[in-house]
Structures are given as C-alpha cells and as structure tokens.
Image (cartoon, rainbow, N blue to C red):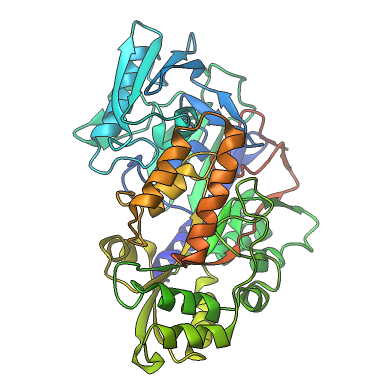
Length: 499
C-alpha cells in the first residue's frame, strides 16, 4: 500500500503546472498498470512496457485484429523445416543513428539468447542459432521444426535494439529503439517520458511526446482519468470501470484480451499430485457463482483455458461444479477432507484477487478443505511458485502473450521443460502433442489440436480455470484515434492525437 500511495502522490505532483505547459495539444499522459521492474529484461513485462511506449519494434508485428504483419522485416521464408530467413526493411535507423542491418539484428537476438533469463518466445530451448546473411537477411535456425516462428517474433520480448543498448548483460533502451517514439527519461517505479522520433521510418507521429506514469492500483488509475490528471488509463477492471461510465468526458473501450483468471495447482506436490484431489477442487468451485459474486456477472465463467468463441476453444465443455461429486472424488482418493490444509497465494496488484481468494476459501471449506490465504506483491511470490514452494495460486494469464496462437502458452505452462510451468506438470505425451503443433504448417489443422489439449488440461484438472477476463481502457474524450491492442502490445501509435 505504501508503494501505491507514493505513486499516486508523485503522479499528482507531476500533473501540476510544469506538465500542463507541455500537455496542451501535442503531449499525452498515460497511466500504465506496470512499472519497470527488472531493468528492461526482455523476458519480463518491461519489454511490453517499452512496446506500449511506442519505442520497441520487432521483426514482425501483430495488428489490432491479431493478424501477423511485417515490421522491421518485410518478408520471411521457411527455407527448411528448421530454418527461416527474414529480409529486413530498407532505410531504417536506430534512434542513436546506427543502421538496422543483419549484423545489428543478429546481435540483438543473440543477446536475447544469452540472457540470464531468456524470453519464453525466443529461448535456447527453441532457437539453435541466429546469423547475418549479407547485409539484409537474418537466418534463424530452430532446434525443432517450427511453423510458428514468425508469430513468436512479433512478441515485444524479441525487440531489436541498437548494439549500444547491450552492455555487461544489461539493457538500456534510451535512444536505442526504432519505433515512432524515443524513451528520454525513466524513473523505474514512477514514470517515463518519450518524445517523437523525427526520423521514424513509418508515418510521422502526430504527438510530440508522452508521459507514462506507473500506478499499479486500478482504483487509483481510474481516479486519475476521472479527475483529468491523465488522458489514458489502461487495464481498468469491470467493477472499477462501472464508476466511470456516467462521466460524459470519458470513453471506455472494452479490451477483448485473451486472458483467463485461474487457480494454479502444484501438480508435483501432495495433495495435488493426485488427480482425484485436483478434480475434487475443480468440482467444488462454482465459477458461475464466483463470476456473479466478485465480478457482478461482467465476466464469462470458464470451462477450460480458452472460451468456446475462440477457434482453439472446445465448443462442448460443461461447467464442473458439483459438490457431491467433489466429496465423492476425495473419498475415492482415500483422502479425509479435514486432513487437507493448503495455502493459496494471490498478488495484490489484481485488486479483485483478495475477494476471489475469499470465495475459493469458503467454497473449498464446504467440502472440508482448509485454505490459508496469503496476499503479496507478485514479485514476492513468483519465486516460490516457480520453485514449487506452494499449494495453490491465483494467476491472471494471457494465453496469447508470447504469440498470437496459444502454442507458446501451452509450451511454457504445460511441458516438462516449460519456462513458466508453475503447475509443475510433466507428461511426455503432452510434450509430444504440443511439439506436433509447432510442426503443423496449416493453421486450420492446428485448431483441433489445440482443442484436444484444452480438453485434456480441463479433464485432468491440471489447473482450475475460473473466469475469462474483461478489462477496459479509459480515456478522455479529447483523445483521438485510440484503440486498445488485444495483446497489450501497443498504446502509443503514430496516429494517436489529443485536442
């Protein structure tokens, strides 16, 4: 709470006369939900912050309709099952004046591969080598055949920065990007500023610049836009967004984010190494009741990792809530409910998680399971989750975060060597199914493969999926040409303007 209060106080101070002199007409103020937490580590959310600031660009991009488009590369060809060649755009310069060429591009991607924590979308587990072929072609060789590499290269984690950005294993993005805006100042916990990149290779930005404040508390972000202290407030939960709907000078855009709130279970540790215990917990949780109680019916209860409206979502999944079945499953497992005392981790930046945890605690109590809830900052609990030192944990997870298909999500979360396998689940058969997706060239053939895996994850209760999220971006009526990106990749665009 102290950090949030400090952020609000500083943000208010920064919105005073000094900012007002620069804000008129050509400078915009944005409130983001994230801070610079890891020194611009590409494997972290910091990369997405750089992308939303209009600075970071990758070889490919995913547009607002989730379509793959050229970016720093204009074309790409799969020359063998494990080899892709990307042809770079002409006449592009980094903001420090260095040219975009094959050598500098390969340098950026090789720095990513050598990082202490490689990005899930582009790690040595997937990538064998990156090399320059002449001045304009970059050749990327994968360890296994992959039809999805161009999608993965649209992730902000694969951003191409100038050679000067990489030093002693650290990253400094100031004056090192290719995007329409240049990062000029950064206070990692409070704010950063950007200015227009006058030599941008694409359409010249309308805005002269922007100030991006970091406020993790959703209520505080909503207050900022309601009071006029900011022009754009991102990632407002539904219950908070309802307080803004009556304001005529504020517009709300629903973000159709591919994101699910889930209850992670530690599959490697008792009692959740027992499938029947996991299924009992799944059957004891009333997701429809949870959606009504905590979200006032503004979100969709989940019956698996993906909603049925997605092309990779099974169409015939049914709710699993059944208390009698839950009690019967515990009996079949030979487990006395009163013997089960488990911990549940939740992170404080998701304001609704405290209430979600309370509902789960009460619902599991109805079948005799005692739940101890711990709420903390995400960075404080992630190490325990990754190390397996937990029983259950709440997670808001984007399943298209690393690529515009869920293969990367499934690979990271449900394979034996997955980089985000917080469930600590390992099954060679699952690994083989996910590997087969990467080797399938035709997108229409991949869709039923995703559906089959989604059914398996749900049937075995590897994770208990709670709700498919709905979020809103709120912005002043003075803002023009604003559109939320479904993957949270983009906020500042060349066309964005303010009166």
